[in-house]
Amino acid sequence: MALFISALAVRADVLDQVPGDALVVLKIKDLDGASRKIAGWAKTIGIDQQDPAWADPLGAIADKTHLGKGVKRDGDLAIAMLDPAKVGSTERDHRRDCARHQLQELRLQFQGDRRRR
Image (cartoon, rainbow, N blue to C red; front, side, top):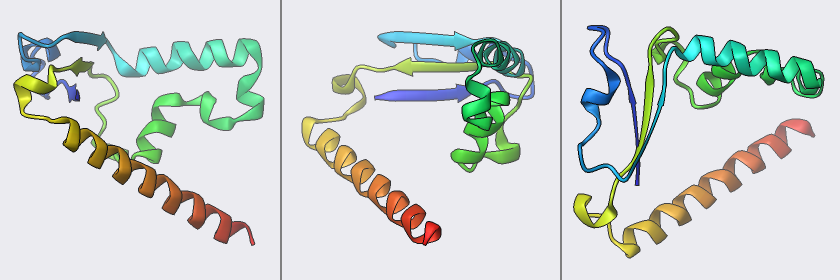
């Protein structure tokens, strides 16, 4: 199970929001700065010409996930992997979530195919 946490407007450290028993934690400081670095790298190797989303990766992710203005661009982000046994997740929950995700992907693909016609 993954947990995504963005820093609050209070400027508290985002890691204060992560449970102490998290298995893995990835912290990204200054999302906008990280996005600019990724965009610069993408421009250097030319993939921004193939896919314009690479010109502003953070904006593209915010749009794709429908977060829009809900992303604090100058804030930090923590991604934590928690032990499923400790948070109450079971193998059955995992299979159900995977099936839901696959169904959602099929719906999005179908909608995209219909729009292209």
